[in-house]
Length: 59
Image 1 (cartoon, rainbow, N blue to C red):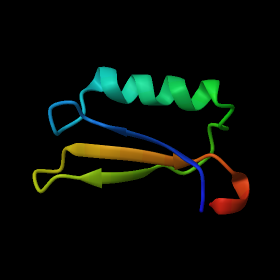
Image 2: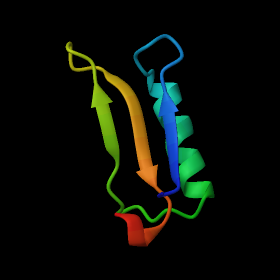
Image 3: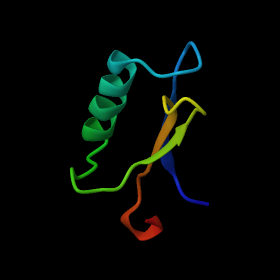
Image 4: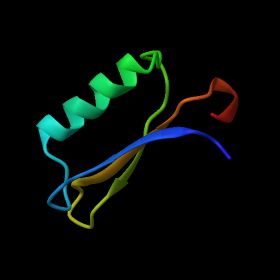
């Protein structure tokens, strides 16, 4: 089972501040800037959830 870092919006859709906090957490965890991020979008195209795999072997 891969280990990942995941964030969701407190009010369903993510705000810019919530997304920035996710990026800060990923950087603190040592994730390289070229890693792919998975995102779940709402029907209106807004970000609901983001996730990044922590282990390079689980890309």
